[in-house]
Image 1 (cartoon, rainbow, N blue to C red):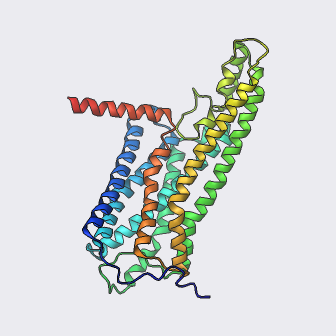
Image 2 (tube, helix red, strand yellow; image 1 turned 30 degrees about the horizontal axis):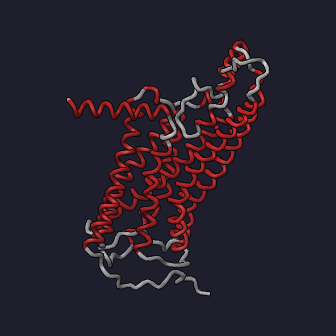
Length: 368
């Protein structure tokens, strides 16, 4: 069976876009670009100006925001121009630079999600040891490693793209005639990171669920303030995510609040009739934690999986797609750079306070 034309035979002579279509496309994509730029810049500014956010976990989030910010200002605008004009008018050199930046920054954004997931996994499952290792120096090393891997994945085509005879100087696209590189790049940039993220967040959820259950079973042992004080001292000793000690810098914060009620005793009586209520609270937190993880994983998979499926099947010459489909899938991936700052800060009280402070500063500057 011949799969080389598994997609619908699209007409080669596609009619040019109308003025209205171009206007709608440009406005929609420009809005996505502006929102991506503003949201990621807000995250960077919040972390840089808020002392409470100066923590290794937040340095990873800041680096992710910087990467997505670069996608917004260096990649998206040229993509809009290319899509709307239906031609590449900036020459060969700019094309090479744009493609290289595009591949590097998008790969780097995806790999950042991996190291953030690993950082949270270690913080939950190996709290005592990782509390000593979770330093700014370690965060910086993780960030440099991510950038190095991204460059290593995206740069090889730079050395052979210039051998092509540019018979169509108005075209600027990634070639798919190196099957080995297609497999290497798609698996290195997405499929392997996706597998790692799924495994890590699965383990995070089950580790947190286990801690919830332990917390529920030990809840009735702390009915007096003296017991609470001992529990709090133990929590301090073992670095196990007390609210006062643990930065709420990730959306898995709900996982890390499990010991809070251990140090807040019920002052009703010694019978502790609140077992059912505590079970309900634990179940509610488990559902919320699952919802948060579902949002993170769902957004990532829906944004990038269609694009990398397309890259793989086109690179393996299993089928072909139209330019319109290719552009849509590419921008679906870009949208992940818009979603990241929302997901990785929206569940964080410290970030919310920092954003409110930034808004108040902006209002004061406007009124001055």
